[in-house]
Image 1 (cartoon, rainbow, N blue to C red):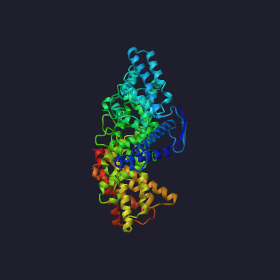
Image 2 (image 1 turned 90 degrees about the horizontal axis):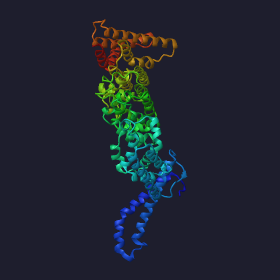
Image 3 (image 1 turned 180 degrees about the vertical axis):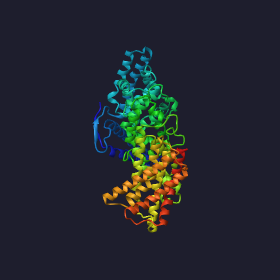
Image 4 (image 1 turned 90 degrees about the vertical axis):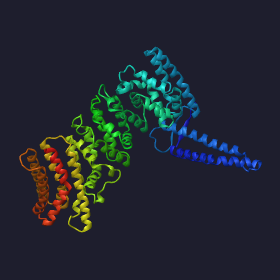
Length: 585
């Protein structure tokens, strides 16, 4: 029984496709050939007539089926083998033998379950475990696994898990802790592996893929995932079933071990999480809702989820296009108008490892978010528009997303640093604002993006819950984002002493802006929000000219000073005014 098999999966897959093409050609030619052969009778030149054609089709079909069975089995036995020759000993000589053995081994499992339903004792369950254990060494054969499942049927398969869980509280609904799941592997692990292996090989019928998934309690589904090595597709199907339930189903009456099982599985397969977030526009809202991790009743789960998100979303993880779509759905979901991350019953999301992880990894997308702000404020600058799919993201959604993250101060600081790096990276100083037309166009586009980044930070910060002093410091820092490129790029200073003086001047400018903002918050000035915003814009323009004078650079003319001031006003004034009004009352 069994044999040693060695196959190059890539070459075998190509041959399987060629055999399928041959069957397709014969199938399309069959009716016409049969009619022609019948009409020609004995004068038909081909030997054996239609029989030869039928045998050819059967040969292709038998060869294709056998080869596919061998490839599927080898891929289960040698996972992650890549390309090249792979080999192993098979438990069965052929697919038919494997399927027959699966059907045979299902019978004692069914009988043991029937006895357990009557006796309901530890001893009767041990007999169930013994019957399932017999299958363990054969499960890598997907034909065997699929036949075993078909013989058991979905109802009996589900009943095995439900009987094991029935004395474990709310396990069927809320799942089980890892230690208990580990114990369950002894009796039900083989069945979980059978399901995962048959699914991976595409051998599950619709009743197992659709109806079973919809009607099976979530705790059973997460047990399946935890006790096996699921494909990315199966893992995401279970996640959608579990996370897509109404939030009320996950009220904190007991620990949410279902979520813990999913996080553990995604820790092993972060690419699956990236795909889930990319392909399902609601998944981010489900998974990242504050209630999920914070109210799970499981210590450290929020931090563990943050670690998995980092694996799935960091720069370079997975495929660029998939990761981009995942980020788009996260920003749109968390930034939705009714987002629970802002002003909801959950309170501010302070000390949130999830916020900090997202803030750390969102930097590559600041350009698209800044372009969205620029498109709204400067619709005539088409060169600065976001690309697809980011052109479909509402600027307010991006602002609310940033605001949700900014409630965590470490996340806010990471966003500020990323915005500063982005603004400096635009290298606006290469394009003097008063040069030739092409140079001015480059300057204008980059200045619009710098203003877009500042606006994004300003509008997001209106949702942050900080002290007045913290908020004033933040506003002053954001207001200087457009100044930063002036001081560091437009007029680069090589002399260390002079450069230090430049940076000191920048700090002094920030202190001056912060003082004006703080006085407004503390009602120490009769100035309105409009007055303060105008003063900040005016001070920005003045600082540029003062800096030029101090460092022996050519000063701006009055007309040029006015153009710089109006540019600052156009990029920042509205967002700055809104931030001051919302905070200052």
